[in-house]
Amino acid sequence: MCLSIPAKIISIDGDMAEVSTGGAVFRACIGLIDVPEVGEYILLHAGFAIQRISEEEATETLELLREIKDASNE
Amino acid sequence: MNDRGIRYIDEYRDKVLIRKLVRLIRDSAHSGYTFMEVCGGHTAAIHRFGIPSLLPPGIKLISGPGCPVCVTGQTIIDKAVAYSRKQGFIIATFGDLMRVPGSLSALEKEKAAGADVRVVFSGLEALEIAKANPGRNIIFPGIGFETTAPGTAVTVKKANDAGLRNFFLLCSHKVMPPAMDSIINDGVNLDGFICPGHVAAITGSSVFEFIPGKYGLGCVIAGFEPVDLLQSVYMLVKQVNERSQSVEIQYTRAVTKKGNLLAKQLMKEVFEPCDSYWRGFGIIPLSGLRLRKEFECFDAEKVFPVKTAREVENQSCLCGEILRGLKTPSDCPLFSGVCNPLNPVGACMVSEEGTCNTHYKYAQ
Image (tube, rainbow over the protein chains, first blue to last red):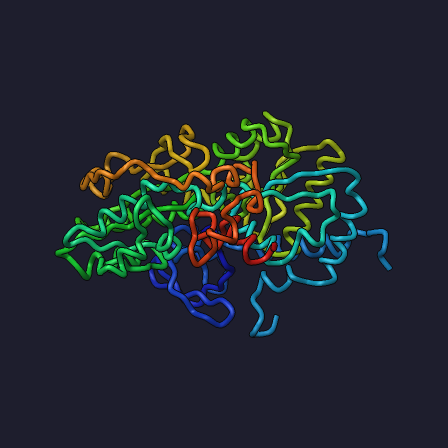
Protein backbone atom coordinates (compact mmCIF):
# COMPACT_ATOMS: atom_id res chain seq x y z
CA MET A 1 0.00 0.00 0.00
CA CYS A 2 2.83 2.39 0.80
CA LEU A 3 4.53 1.18 -2.35
CA SER A 4 6.18 4.08 -4.15
CA ILE A 5 8.36 3.92 -7.23
CA PRO A 6 11.02 6.32 -8.52
CA ALA A 7 9.85 8.23 -11.59
CA LYS A 8 11.26 11.07 -13.67
CA ILE A 9 9.21 14.20 -14.37
CA ILE A 10 9.07 14.61 -18.15
CA SER A 11 6.56 17.45 -18.48
CA ILE A 12 4.56 19.71 -16.18
CA ASP A 13 1.06 21.15 -16.64
CA GLY A 14 -0.10 23.08 -13.57
CA ASP A 15 -0.05 20.69 -10.62
CA MET A 16 -0.15 17.66 -12.91
CA ALA A 17 2.84 16.08 -14.63
CA GLU A 18 3.78 13.26 -16.94
CA VAL A 19 6.27 11.02 -15.18
CA SER A 20 8.21 8.09 -16.55
CA THR A 21 9.43 4.95 -14.84
CA GLY A 22 11.19 2.13 -16.67
CA GLY A 23 9.75 3.41 -19.97
CA ALA A 24 6.12 3.55 -18.75
CA VAL A 25 4.54 7.01 -18.61
CA PHE A 26 1.95 7.97 -15.98
CA ARG A 27 0.02 11.13 -15.15
CA ALA A 28 0.72 12.20 -11.61
CA CYS A 29 -0.23 15.07 -9.32
CA ILE A 30 2.83 17.05 -8.24
CA GLY A 31 0.92 19.31 -5.86
CA LEU A 32 2.79 17.89 -2.87
CA ILE A 33 6.21 18.86 -4.24
CA ASP A 34 7.61 22.32 -3.59
CA VAL A 35 8.68 23.82 -6.97
CA PRO A 36 9.02 20.64 -9.04
CA GLU A 37 11.20 20.70 -12.15
CA VAL A 38 11.29 18.71 -15.36
CA GLY A 39 14.10 16.13 -15.20
CA GLU A 40 13.82 15.64 -11.44
CA TYR A 41 13.11 12.23 -9.94
CA ILE A 42 10.22 11.82 -7.52
CA LEU A 43 8.61 8.97 -5.58
CA LEU A 44 5.28 8.09 -7.19
CA HIS A 45 2.57 6.75 -4.89
CA ALA A 46 -1.11 6.20 -5.87
CA GLY A 47 -1.03 8.93 -8.50
CA PHE A 48 0.84 11.48 -6.38
CA ALA A 49 4.47 12.51 -6.26
CA ILE A 50 5.08 12.31 -2.51
CA GLN A 51 8.72 13.37 -2.28
CA ARG A 52 11.63 14.32 -4.52
CA ILE A 53 14.60 11.96 -4.67
CA SER A 54 17.94 13.52 -3.83
CA GLU A 55 20.53 12.50 -6.42
CA GLU A 56 23.31 13.71 -4.17
CA GLU A 57 22.18 11.58 -1.21
CA ALA A 58 21.56 8.57 -3.46
CA THR A 59 25.12 8.70 -4.78
CA GLU A 60 26.60 9.28 -1.35
CA THR A 61 24.84 6.22 0.16
CA LEU A 62 26.39 3.97 -2.49
CA GLU A 63 29.83 5.60 -2.29
CA LEU A 64 29.97 5.25 1.49
CA LEU A 65 29.07 1.58 1.20
CA ARG A 66 31.78 0.99 -1.39
CA GLU A 67 34.33 2.66 0.87
CA ILE A 68 33.61 0.54 3.96
CA LYS A 69 36.38 -2.01 4.48
CA ASP A 70 35.33 -5.48 5.54
CA ALA A 71 37.35 -8.54 6.55
CA SER A 72 37.13 -10.20 3.14
CA ASN A 73 37.94 -7.04 1.20
CA GLU A 74 40.56 -7.75 -1.35
CA MET B 1 22.03 3.67 -16.49
CA ASN B 2 20.71 2.09 -19.70
CA ASP B 3 17.14 2.66 -20.92
CA ARG B 4 15.86 -0.63 -19.60
CA GLY B 5 17.04 -0.05 -16.07
CA ILE B 6 15.14 1.95 -13.49
CA ARG B 7 17.21 4.57 -11.83
CA TYR B 8 17.38 4.49 -8.04
CA ILE B 9 16.33 0.83 -8.11
CA ASP B 10 18.95 -1.10 -10.07
CA GLU B 11 21.92 0.40 -8.20
CA TYR B 12 20.45 -0.85 -4.92
CA ARG B 13 20.31 -4.42 -6.21
CA ASP B 14 24.07 -4.55 -6.84
CA LYS B 15 25.41 -8.04 -6.08
CA VAL B 16 28.86 -6.87 -4.97
CA LEU B 17 27.37 -4.49 -2.40
CA ILE B 18 24.88 -7.11 -1.23
CA ARG B 19 27.67 -9.67 -0.64
CA LYS B 20 29.71 -7.09 1.21
CA LEU B 21 26.80 -6.13 3.47
CA VAL B 22 26.06 -9.79 4.21
CA ARG B 23 29.73 -10.25 5.30
CA LEU B 24 29.61 -7.07 7.39
CA ILE B 25 26.44 -8.25 9.16
CA ARG B 26 27.86 -11.75 9.76
CA ASP B 27 31.08 -10.29 11.19
CA SER B 28 29.31 -7.92 13.56
CA ALA B 29 26.34 -9.99 14.77
CA HIS B 30 27.57 -11.44 18.07
CA SER B 31 24.32 -12.39 19.75
CA GLY B 32 20.59 -12.67 19.13
CA TYR B 33 18.75 -9.70 17.61
CA THR B 34 15.05 -9.24 16.86
CA PHE B 35 14.05 -6.40 14.60
CA MET B 36 10.54 -5.53 13.48
CA GLU B 37 9.72 -4.10 10.09
CA VAL B 38 6.49 -2.20 10.50
CA CYS B 39 5.85 -1.46 6.82
CA GLY B 40 4.01 -4.04 4.70
CA GLY B 41 6.09 -2.94 1.73
CA HIS B 42 9.19 -3.92 3.70
CA THR B 43 7.68 -7.29 4.63
CA ALA B 44 7.00 -8.01 0.96
CA ALA B 45 10.47 -6.82 -0.16
CA ILE B 46 12.29 -8.74 2.60
CA HIS B 47 10.73 -12.03 1.52
CA ARG B 48 10.73 -11.34 -2.21
CA PHE B 49 14.48 -10.74 -2.10
CA GLY B 50 15.11 -13.64 0.29
CA ILE B 51 16.75 -11.36 2.88
CA PRO B 52 16.19 -13.76 5.86
CA SER B 53 18.23 -16.45 4.04
CA LEU B 54 21.18 -14.04 3.83
CA LEU B 55 21.20 -13.23 7.54
CA PRO B 56 22.96 -15.20 10.28
CA PRO B 57 20.56 -17.34 12.36
CA GLY B 58 20.82 -14.98 15.33
CA ILE B 59 19.02 -12.19 13.49
CA LYS B 60 15.27 -12.51 13.42
CA LEU B 61 13.04 -10.17 11.42
CA ILE B 62 9.39 -10.02 12.49
CA SER B 63 6.54 -8.22 10.78
CA GLY B 64 4.38 -5.54 12.34
CA PRO B 65 1.12 -3.71 11.63
CA GLY B 66 2.22 -1.78 8.54
CA CYS B 67 -0.24 -3.08 6.00
CA PRO B 68 -3.17 -0.63 6.00
CA VAL B 69 -5.50 -3.16 4.36
CA CYS B 70 -4.71 -5.65 7.14
CA VAL B 71 -5.26 -3.32 10.09
CA THR B 72 -8.43 -1.73 8.71
CA GLY B 73 -11.40 -3.03 10.68
CA GLN B 74 -14.21 -4.93 9.00
CA THR B 75 -16.61 -2.06 9.72
CA ILE B 76 -15.14 0.03 6.90
CA ILE B 77 -15.56 -2.85 4.45
CA ASP B 78 -19.09 -3.47 5.76
CA LYS B 79 -19.93 0.21 5.24
CA ALA B 80 -18.46 0.23 1.71
CA VAL B 81 -20.54 -2.88 0.96
CA ALA B 82 -23.66 -1.16 2.38
CA TYR B 83 -23.07 1.92 0.15
CA SER B 84 -22.49 -0.29 -2.89
CA ARG B 85 -25.98 -1.75 -2.39
CA LYS B 86 -27.64 1.68 -2.38
CA GLN B 87 -29.32 2.95 -5.52
CA GLY B 88 -27.30 5.64 -7.32
CA PHE B 89 -23.98 4.99 -5.56
CA ILE B 90 -20.61 4.20 -7.12
CA ILE B 91 -17.72 2.87 -5.04
CA ALA B 92 -14.35 4.04 -6.35
CA THR B 93 -11.70 2.11 -4.46
CA PHE B 94 -8.03 1.19 -4.46
CA GLY B 95 -7.75 -2.36 -5.80
CA ASP B 96 -6.28 -3.50 -2.48
CA LEU B 97 -9.70 -3.38 -0.80
CA MET B 98 -11.66 -5.36 -3.40
CA ARG B 99 -11.14 -8.79 -1.92
CA VAL B 100 -10.93 -7.96 1.78
CA PRO B 101 -13.65 -9.93 3.54
CA GLY B 102 -16.13 -7.88 5.57
CA SER B 103 -18.46 -9.51 8.07
CA LEU B 104 -20.78 -10.85 5.37
CA SER B 105 -19.45 -9.85 1.95
CA ALA B 106 -16.61 -8.19 0.05
CA LEU B 107 -16.62 -5.43 -2.58
CA GLU B 108 -15.54 -7.95 -5.21
CA LYS B 109 -18.63 -10.08 -4.46
CA GLU B 110 -20.91 -7.03 -4.60
CA LYS B 111 -19.44 -6.07 -7.98
CA ALA B 112 -20.04 -9.60 -9.25
CA ALA B 113 -23.64 -9.26 -8.05
CA GLY B 114 -24.08 -6.09 -10.11
CA ALA B 115 -23.00 -3.21 -7.85
CA ASP B 116 -21.06 -0.35 -9.47
CA VAL B 117 -17.65 -0.82 -7.85
CA ARG B 118 -14.68 0.62 -9.76
CA VAL B 119 -10.98 0.25 -9.07
CA VAL B 120 -9.01 3.51 -9.14
CA PHE B 121 -5.29 4.13 -9.00
CA SER B 122 -5.67 7.45 -7.20
CA GLY B 123 -8.25 9.60 -5.43
CA LEU B 124 -8.12 11.99 -8.39
CA GLU B 125 -9.62 9.27 -10.60
CA ALA B 126 -12.52 9.05 -8.15
CA LEU B 127 -13.00 12.81 -8.66
CA GLU B 128 -13.14 12.31 -12.43
CA ILE B 129 -15.83 9.65 -11.93
CA ALA B 130 -17.77 12.13 -9.76
CA LYS B 131 -17.53 14.83 -12.45
CA ALA B 132 -18.68 12.41 -15.15
CA ASN B 133 -21.65 11.16 -13.08
CA PRO B 134 -23.31 14.25 -11.58
CA GLY B 135 -26.50 12.38 -10.70
CA ARG B 136 -24.76 9.72 -8.62
CA ASN B 137 -22.87 9.62 -5.34
CA ILE B 138 -19.25 8.48 -5.41
CA ILE B 139 -17.77 6.90 -2.29
CA PHE B 140 -13.97 6.75 -2.07
CA PRO B 141 -12.67 4.61 0.83
CA GLY B 142 -9.60 6.46 2.09
CA ILE B 143 -7.23 3.96 3.58
CA GLY B 144 -3.50 4.12 4.15
CA PHE B 145 -0.93 5.74 6.39
CA GLU B 146 0.91 9.05 6.14
CA THR B 147 2.15 8.03 2.66
CA THR B 148 -1.38 7.98 1.24
CA ALA B 149 -3.22 10.54 3.39
CA PRO B 150 -1.67 13.65 1.75
CA GLY B 151 -3.01 12.51 -1.65
CA THR B 152 -6.47 12.17 -0.12
CA ALA B 153 -6.09 15.65 1.39
CA VAL B 154 -5.33 17.06 -2.08
CA THR B 155 -8.30 15.13 -3.51
CA VAL B 156 -10.73 16.56 -0.92
CA LYS B 157 -9.41 20.08 -1.47
CA LYS B 158 -9.83 19.71 -5.23
CA ALA B 159 -13.39 18.42 -4.72
CA ASN B 160 -14.05 21.48 -2.56
CA ASP B 161 -12.50 23.91 -5.07
CA ALA B 162 -14.52 22.36 -7.91
CA GLY B 163 -17.72 22.64 -5.85
CA LEU B 164 -18.36 18.90 -6.24
CA ARG B 165 -21.24 17.73 -4.06
CA ASN B 166 -21.35 14.07 -5.09
CA PHE B 167 -17.88 12.99 -3.94
CA PHE B 168 -17.60 11.43 -0.46
CA LEU B 169 -14.71 10.08 1.53
CA LEU B 170 -15.14 6.97 3.69
CA CYS B 171 -12.18 7.94 5.82
CA SER B 172 -10.05 5.32 7.52
CA HIS B 173 -6.59 6.88 7.29
CA LYS B 174 -4.20 6.02 10.09
CA VAL B 175 -0.87 7.26 11.41
CA MET B 176 1.98 4.96 12.30
CA PRO B 177 3.80 6.17 15.47
CA PRO B 178 0.95 5.44 17.96
CA ALA B 179 0.77 1.82 16.70
CA MET B 180 4.53 1.42 17.23
CA ASP B 181 4.12 2.78 20.74
CA SER B 182 1.33 0.27 21.32
CA ILE B 183 3.49 -2.63 20.10
CA ILE B 184 6.29 -1.74 22.48
CA ASN B 185 3.84 -1.51 25.37
CA ASP B 186 2.45 -4.91 24.37
CA GLY B 187 5.74 -6.37 25.53
CA VAL B 188 7.00 -7.84 22.23
CA ASN B 189 10.66 -8.64 22.65
CA LEU B 190 12.42 -6.28 20.25
CA ASP B 191 15.87 -4.78 19.73
CA GLY B 192 14.84 -2.24 17.15
CA PHE B 193 12.62 -1.16 14.30
CA ILE B 194 13.16 -1.07 10.56
CA CYS B 195 11.08 2.11 10.20
CA PRO B 196 8.76 2.72 7.24
CA GLY B 197 10.61 4.64 4.50
CA HIS B 198 7.67 6.08 2.60
CA VAL B 199 5.75 7.08 5.73
CA ALA B 200 8.93 8.85 6.84
CA ALA B 201 9.33 10.53 3.42
CA ILE B 202 6.23 12.51 4.47
CA THR B 203 6.55 12.70 8.27
CA GLY B 204 10.33 13.08 8.52
CA SER B 205 12.48 11.01 10.86
CA SER B 206 11.68 13.08 13.95
CA VAL B 207 8.32 11.35 14.61
CA PHE B 208 10.21 8.19 15.63
CA GLU B 209 12.48 9.89 18.17
CA PHE B 210 10.27 8.84 21.10
CA ILE B 211 11.27 5.21 20.44
CA PRO B 212 14.95 5.45 21.43
CA GLY B 213 14.14 8.33 23.80
CA LYS B 214 11.40 6.63 25.82
CA TYR B 215 12.17 2.94 25.24
CA GLY B 216 15.87 2.74 24.34
CA LEU B 217 15.15 0.88 21.10
CA GLY B 218 17.02 1.38 17.83
CA CYS B 219 15.38 2.81 14.71
CA VAL B 220 16.63 2.86 11.13
CA ILE B 221 14.45 4.33 8.39
CA ALA B 222 14.96 2.03 5.44
CA GLY B 223 14.52 2.00 1.69
CA PHE B 224 12.95 -0.93 -0.13
CA GLU B 225 15.73 -2.53 -2.19
CA PRO B 226 18.04 -5.35 -1.00
CA VAL B 227 21.00 -3.03 -0.40
CA ASP B 228 18.74 -0.67 1.58
CA LEU B 229 17.34 -3.47 3.74
CA LEU B 230 20.69 -5.13 4.44
CA GLN B 231 22.38 -1.83 5.21
CA SER B 232 19.53 -1.02 7.62
CA VAL B 233 19.95 -4.36 9.41
CA TYR B 234 23.70 -3.68 9.64
CA MET B 235 23.04 -0.20 11.10
CA LEU B 236 20.62 -1.67 13.67
CA VAL B 237 23.11 -4.39 14.68
CA LYS B 238 25.73 -1.69 15.22
CA GLN B 239 23.32 0.44 17.28
CA VAL B 240 22.62 -2.53 19.55
CA ASN B 241 26.31 -3.55 19.81
CA GLU B 242 27.45 -0.03 20.59
CA ARG B 243 24.40 0.77 22.74
CA SER B 244 23.93 3.86 20.60
CA GLN B 245 20.20 3.47 19.95
CA SER B 246 18.89 6.44 17.97
CA VAL B 247 16.90 7.28 14.85
CA GLU B 248 19.16 6.88 11.83
CA ILE B 249 18.13 7.35 8.20
CA GLN B 250 19.40 4.78 5.72
CA TYR B 251 16.94 5.97 3.04
CA THR B 252 18.55 9.40 2.79
CA ARG B 253 17.66 9.83 -0.87
CA ALA B 254 13.99 10.30 0.12
CA VAL B 255 13.87 10.94 3.86
CA THR B 256 14.91 13.99 5.86
CA LYS B 257 14.45 14.91 9.48
CA LYS B 258 11.55 17.25 8.71
CA GLY B 259 9.90 15.32 5.86
CA ASN B 260 7.60 16.85 3.26
CA LEU B 261 6.43 20.10 4.87
CA LEU B 262 3.94 20.90 2.11
CA ALA B 263 2.30 17.47 2.43
CA LYS B 264 2.19 17.74 6.23
CA GLN B 265 0.59 21.20 5.98
CA LEU B 266 -2.11 19.92 3.60
CA MET B 267 -2.86 16.94 5.86
CA LYS B 268 -3.22 19.27 8.82
CA GLU B 269 -5.51 21.57 6.88
CA VAL B 270 -7.92 18.78 5.86
CA PHE B 271 -7.67 16.21 8.67
CA GLU B 272 -7.56 16.17 12.45
CA PRO B 273 -6.40 13.32 14.71
CA CYS B 274 -8.96 10.91 16.12
CA ASP B 275 -8.99 7.57 17.93
CA SER B 276 -8.96 4.69 15.50
CA TYR B 277 -9.65 0.95 15.52
CA TRP B 278 -6.81 -1.34 14.38
CA ARG B 279 -7.41 -5.01 13.77
CA GLY B 280 -5.51 -6.95 16.42
CA PHE B 281 -5.02 -3.89 18.62
CA GLY B 282 -8.46 -2.42 19.22
CA ILE B 283 -8.78 1.33 19.60
CA ILE B 284 -5.46 3.18 19.59
CA PRO B 285 -5.82 6.78 20.85
CA LEU B 286 -5.13 9.49 18.26
CA SER B 287 -3.95 7.00 15.66
CA GLY B 288 -6.49 7.94 12.99
CA LEU B 289 -7.37 10.91 10.81
CA ARG B 290 -10.84 12.33 10.23
CA LEU B 291 -12.04 15.24 8.10
CA ARG B 292 -12.06 18.62 9.81
CA LYS B 293 -15.41 20.36 10.30
CA GLU B 294 -15.02 22.58 7.25
CA PHE B 295 -14.72 19.48 5.04
CA GLU B 296 -17.46 17.44 6.74
CA CYS B 297 -19.74 17.79 3.69
CA PHE B 298 -17.38 15.23 2.05
CA ASP B 299 -17.60 12.76 4.94
CA ALA B 300 -19.59 9.74 3.71
CA GLU B 301 -20.39 8.55 7.23
CA LYS B 302 -21.75 11.96 8.26
CA VAL B 303 -23.80 12.58 5.12
CA PHE B 304 -25.09 9.02 4.66
CA PRO B 305 -25.03 7.23 8.02
CA VAL B 306 -25.30 3.48 7.54
CA LYS B 307 -25.74 0.80 10.16
CA THR B 308 -23.59 -2.29 9.99
CA ALA B 309 -23.78 -5.54 11.89
CA ARG B 310 -21.30 -6.24 14.68
CA GLU B 311 -17.95 -7.39 13.32
CA VAL B 312 -17.74 -11.14 12.89
CA GLU B 313 -14.15 -12.35 12.62
CA ASN B 314 -13.19 -16.00 12.27
CA GLN B 315 -12.15 -17.04 15.78
CA SER B 316 -9.37 -19.32 14.51
CA CYS B 317 -7.75 -16.56 12.41
CA LEU B 318 -4.54 -15.26 14.00
CA CYS B 319 -4.29 -12.03 11.93
CA GLY B 320 -4.58 -9.93 15.08
CA GLU B 321 -1.66 -11.59 16.89
CA ILE B 322 0.39 -11.68 13.69
CA LEU B 323 -0.08 -7.91 13.20
CA ARG B 324 1.21 -7.33 16.73
CA GLY B 325 4.31 -9.44 16.13
CA LEU B 326 3.20 -12.02 18.71
CA LYS B 327 2.62 -14.91 16.26
CA THR B 328 3.85 -15.90 12.82
CA PRO B 329 1.69 -17.25 9.96
CA SER B 330 2.90 -20.82 10.58
CA ASP B 331 1.36 -20.64 14.09
CA CYS B 332 -2.10 -20.22 12.53
CA PRO B 333 -4.16 -23.42 12.06
CA LEU B 334 -5.83 -21.91 8.97
CA PHE B 335 -2.62 -20.81 7.21
CA SER B 336 -2.10 -22.28 3.72
CA GLY B 337 -4.96 -24.75 4.13
CA VAL B 338 -8.37 -23.19 4.68
CA CYS B 339 -6.82 -19.73 4.30
CA ASN B 340 -4.88 -19.11 1.09
CA PRO B 341 -4.60 -16.21 -1.40
CA LEU B 342 -7.52 -17.54 -3.50
CA ASN B 343 -9.76 -18.03 -0.45
CA PRO B 344 -8.46 -15.65 2.20
CA VAL B 345 -9.99 -15.81 5.66
CA GLY B 346 -8.10 -12.87 7.16
CA ALA B 347 -6.93 -9.61 5.67
CA CYS B 348 -3.26 -10.57 6.10
CA MET B 349 -3.77 -13.20 3.40
CA VAL B 350 -5.59 -10.82 1.01
CA SER B 351 -3.17 -7.97 0.73
CA GLU B 352 -0.04 -8.30 -1.39
CA GLU B 353 1.79 -6.79 1.57
CA GLY B 354 0.08 -8.90 4.20
CA THR B 355 2.39 -11.07 6.29
CA CYS B 356 0.41 -14.26 5.54
CA ASN B 357 0.21 -13.56 1.81
CA THR B 358 3.96 -12.85 1.68
CA HIS B 359 4.82 -15.96 3.70
CA TYR B 360 2.52 -18.08 1.50
CA LYS B 361 4.31 -16.88 -1.63
CA TYR B 362 7.93 -16.77 -0.55
CA ALA B 363 8.68 -18.21 2.85
CA GLN B 364 7.26 -21.73 2.78
